Image (cartoon, rainbow, N blue to C red):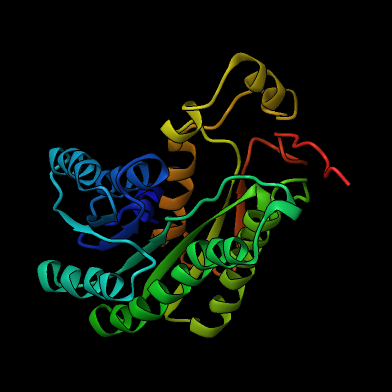
Amino acid sequence: MSNILDRFRLDGQVAVITGAGRGIGAGTALAYADAGADVVLAARTVSQLEETAEQVRARGQRALVIPCDVLDAEQREEVIAKGIRELGRLDILVNNAGGWPPKAALDTTEDEFEACFRFNVTSAFAMTRLAVPKMVETTGAGAIVNISSAAGRFNARGFVAYGTAKSALSFLTQNLAQDFAPKVRVNGIIVGAILTDALAGFMNDDLERQMLSKTPMNRLGCVEDIAACALYLASPAASYVTGEVYGVTGGLAQIQVEMPPENL
């Protein structure tokens, strides 16, 4: 048997990562570069993508920056097409772009609800439809990692749009795994509270105490916690894993943030 750590290598592979300018997307790009992959970095903010690209290149890997709003069909197509033109193949897709702020159910409009679904679910489905045929065409196989959320696993006030969308993304992951096996594996990650720049922007001592009190591991997650799972799911180490949605949540059994009840 060869060294088991070799199964976590991605040498010669190419990964497309959405939302790659910061946070989980950037952390995943660096993890893949550490494992030997070249990366296509897609997001809306070029300056953030360039920062990630610089760190990838410092690790000796190629990084291709492609500005992309995942809600725009032409921009999605360009990410896949240009990535293959420049880097020659496609092995991995990480659907990381997403998010939505909590809001009371009765204050959430139909347009907002549908926009949240498009951002978190439809965009991932559309990227996957573009990527899978190219994976099979250029490499004969592939791996997709969808970044979901604990909000899609646990019921909680204020998350009617985001929670429903992330729950749908997790179910989509399991469905597509059946569609694309055995050539392309599809897995997901249920993300807990991760201390990214976005979370740090409104974190305070009271909120942190509240969140830690509901987290069995007694700490907030870091980007590397998610990146390590994303590396496993994309790598040959997980070659017999598809249709799974792994929780990287610190042991959560409920949402950490309590929103007020509806004013009925």
